[in-house]
Structures are given as C-alpha cells and as structure tokens.
Length: 470
Image 1 (cartoon, rainbow, N blue to C red):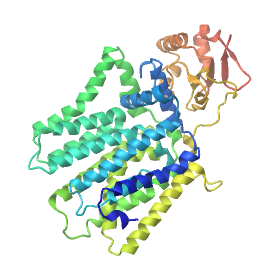
Image 2 (cartoon, rainbow, N blue to C red; image 1 turned 90 degrees about the vertical axis):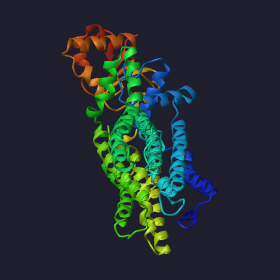
Image 3 (tube, one colour; image 1 turned 90 degrees about the horizontal axis):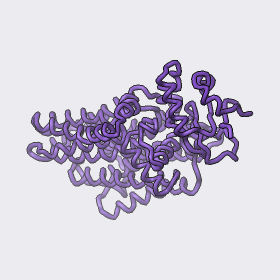
Image 4 (cartoon, helix red, strand yellow; image 1 turned 120 degrees about the horizontal axis):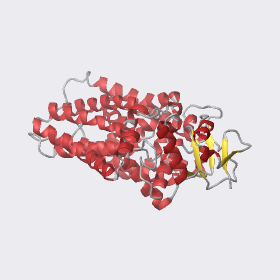
C-alpha cells in the first residue's frame, strides 16, 4: 500500500478517498452504538430549532458555531446520527485532501507523495467515535487552514498582513471548540520565530483571533445574555469535567500506534544527516509546537475520548511520514505499515461492532447511551433529567434549560439560595417537564423550597421518577 501511494498523481485522490469509504461502509450497513455526546449535540440542535437561545435557554457548554452546525443538521434531517456521520465524513474528506495537497504544493517534504494523506486518513480512525461530527473535528479544519496560511508566510521573504487570516481562522476554530483558543500561542510563536513577522503583524494576528470572539460576545450582550454566555461557555471550560464519561483503556489503545509512529518519526529526524532545506526544518519545528499546544488542551477537555484527540492527527500524520521515509528496506516499511493499519482497524471495528465477544476494549461503554429508565411507551414527552445520564432523552424531549448537569448544579445544587429557587421555578413555569428523573436526590429539597412545583408532581412506581399530574 505504501508503494502505491508513494507517487503523486491526481487520480490517487480517488483511491485514497475510496479507501476511506471502504473503511466506513461496514459501519453504515451495521448500526453501532449512539454516544451520549451525540445525543447531547442533537438535543442542542433541536432546542435551537425550536427558537431557544444557546446558553440562556439551553444550559450546555458546546461552543456556539458547533451548536449552529447541529441546528442546521436538525433543521434538515431532525435527530439523525446518520446525518452527523455523513457530515463528519465530508469534513474528514476536506481535511485529508487539504493536508495532502498542502504538504505537496508547499514542498513541506523532500518528495511529493500521497503518504501524508494516507497517514492522515488512517489516523482519522482512532476509534469509532471519531466518525461523528464532533466540535474537535470541525475545529481542526480551521486549524489546518491557519497552518496553510502560516506556511505560506514562511515561504516568502517576510510576513505580510495576511497573518490576520491565521488569527481569524484560530478564532473561528475556538468558536467551534473553545480549547482550540490555545493555538493562538502556537501561531504567535511560529510567526515570531519562523516568519520574520514584526510586532505589528503579530498584533494583527491576535486581533484576527479576537475579532470573531468579540463579535460573538457582542451578540450575547445585545440579547442581554452575557452572564449566561460567560457561565456556560467561558467559565465552563475550566469547571465542566464529565470524567465519568471517560474510558482510559480504550483511549490509550487508540492513541498507542499513531503516537508511537509519530514519536519514532520525530526521533528519526535526528538520525538523518542533512537533506532538509531551511523551510522544511522550520515546518518541523512549528509542527512540534502544534503538538505541545495540543497536549495543553487535554486539561480543558470536558471528557477524555479518542474523538477529543483529533487535533493531534495533523502533527501525528506529519511526523509519521519521516519514520517510513527513513526505513531503507521497502519490505520492512510495507510490513510495518500493514501491521499498524490492521491493528488500528481491528480496534476501530471492535469498538463499533464488538467483534470479540466479551471484550470491552474500544467499546467506550461509559460513553454509550444506555437503555432509558422510562417505559418504552413513554415517547415524545417533555423530560428533565437531574444527573449525567441522558438516556431518557433518546425518545423524549428536553424540558427546561438544564441539559448539562455540571452547569445545572448552579441552580439545582444551590437550592438554599433564594435566587436559584426563583430561577428553577421560572424555568418550570415556562417549560414544565412531564417527567422528572432525579439521579442526584434534588427533587425533595426542591419540593420543600417550592411547594407550587411540588403540588404539580407525584412519585411513580419507578425509582427516582416523578410524573406531572394531569
């Protein structure tokens, strides 16, 4: 396979994208588990379609442009995991083609080849959760555009005012996935050290970064929702930690091969004497900074899953090239790649389809939507879940803004505050839930603080479930 993609002919894009489709087709023919984040994103899109404002009427920490993408999908397809997967595939195709074309037309490597696109395509399949339209996936597209503009500046004698684009792209990336805002540090360091940019030009890049963010802040200010925006998005990146959704074993297994190949590729740079022009050496250095910044984003992730590490794919694919380039024996390179390819796809399909009975590795069980605590005949009802398990929303609709439990705690875990009780009462009055599922033992205290709410509900035969009286 390496030998086939070693040359550089346009028709090989068809082969590369055909390989991408072949990898994903088995999962389109066989349903695989719905994930809690997917359900969360579909609910956000649905609520926005109903005229609700994100952060004010929907308490969730998803970034605004990602929410707009989910709104657009819901407006056309409704709640559709297949639509999320289809949109994610289109975004993946863009990234693969762009990364491969960019590295070749800018002569990032000594030779023109389809290897960068091949490695990028393979690493997009860290786990089956990478098939969905995650905020990280959408954000990475804009980081790649920033990278393309940055190396275009490096290829010139001096930086130009196009550095505004670099910051602007990163600002857009941050509005898709807030931790991506850290990449402005990557852009600033790269501009200062590797492009000859002046202080004014670096400031222009920072202004480009701040411009889309400031526009978003202005929007929420005009809608008198700036406090909601700050609490549910800006402050939440440091506070919201849904670590109960994390699967550390599957995460480690998913990253082991691509990270290992990238590290080996990076180390192989020290064994080669000469052969890289100054421009290529500078690209190596800015890709190393990219990787360091990507590591720093881990501390800002709401939960740890392979899909959250898609921003690592560009530097991993970039450095993996050097590992295979420096293997002199063709058969050894082919064998090494074939083993890596087979092991990654085995874990990928094992996670999605459970090929090995009883094996939990790669299944991301803690991330999957479980069976609903409500009977199957209860559908299309307005439900409030007090807790992290969103399974009852699969066949029902969210009532009140309290979607994200970590954010809902501001009110529901603070019922000794008069203002919190008033907030909850107002939300119940405007959008009363037909059923309340209380996983955090909050309802009894709420009923004590707000007897008017208590008078509307009765306990059911199902534990921790309350029904609205007719």
